[in-house]
Image 1: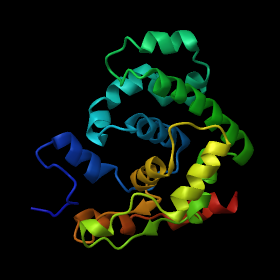
Image 2: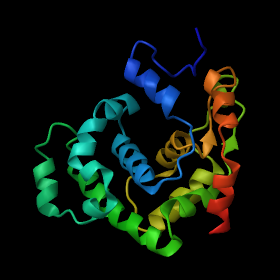
Image 3: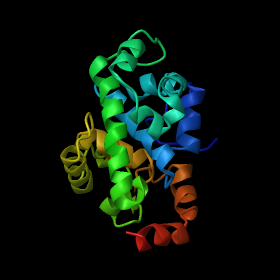
Length: 203
């Protein structure tokens, strides 16, 4: 038996797969980052597992997370999606996803990629935290505060510092795996320095 982070409910195989295969692994691709931001913003006020179970529904609702297509969605699409059971049917959150897609595209145009913009908040390298007990986990950080503040300035919605910190954990900007978790060292050993340097050199 391998040791995992204590927050993982090992009776839920999809939750285990998310922890083992995705959480904390650096994401440098814009399409995936848009997916993660969409799902995190949808979580506000809900459990992450609620959103994880609806992930396929979100893929269907939001064009496989194709940011260009989502950015073109209209008020009519918002009304249509309010009847779609595959997602959280919250009008403000649905509208925010479309708004965020438009803001995401503006960032891409300015920085060349959203990844280049996002990773600047950790100086293009993952931050590895020491996590030995539940009390070591943070809900926010200076980095998530700065990232969230800048996102708000750029027009993003439902992405406060706590949500942004969760996003940073999920996409590997912050490695918050427990020190005893088998994924901690595995993720670190998988860091691609050349990819980080390439991202940084274009900043």
